[in-house]
Image (tube, rainbow, N blue to C red; front, side, top):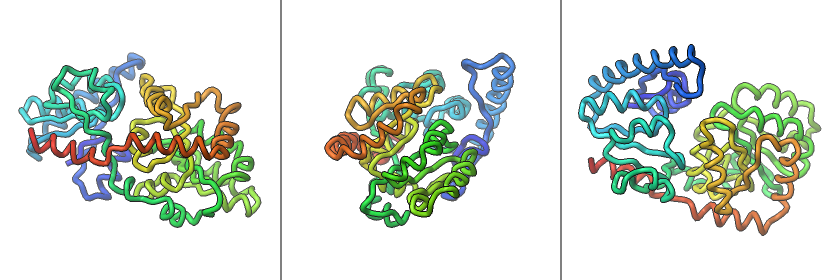
Length: 328
């Protein structure tokens, strides 16, 4: 059983996989106005009761949580019923929800050695960041064939997360002709900006329009969209730490200015290891196009970045987490 945010992408994914899904409504409490905090606190209280009912009915042997506000009421309910808990921390630092709940767990699974310092010795295990097997199995040839791309021309995949990233969408839209003259683009835009991007594409000459593919959202095809690229342009959410090493593709990361700086830490982690270039969102207008075009021309740097990002891959991560679940 999967308990997640009502109406969120996890509901659609769980449904596609035929996993029973229980939707709940929970919001944050930090850095918000008093009225929003009060409303979200009431949601949290209701979610705790709701989670307790769902757990009592389903009677799980173990609970696996991945942090975030949605997980907190589930963990409290499971702990009260003495159900063993494993927490999987995808980020490089624990957020508020995990700081508040990790003591309820038997073990915290972390992606990298750097994260162990946040927990007492013996309470955290380095498992790696789990991603679907398809990310490791996908090949560049298959990705380019699937999206009908010219194998002789560079490919850039732009991805702003499940909701899209307006800043990334706009910098691509306003520079579309310049970019398409030197590269093909697979653009996963989210729902809000897709119409504007399609409109921009419709105004292009056919030779350039052929180089641009825009999608609202990809699920099954996402590994192919990433592995097809020479460079990925993206936000720096936690999935970046697992999926980009799995496909072995260098990236230009534009961390979002939110979530207590988690994305900046993720981007810095990859950049410091030579696997990515970090770009400040406030400098997109002046630096994005030259940074991307120069990187596409620099084959030696691309090769070095590819080697660096592949070193971070942990294809055994899901098995390691499964072992923790089986061992409680």
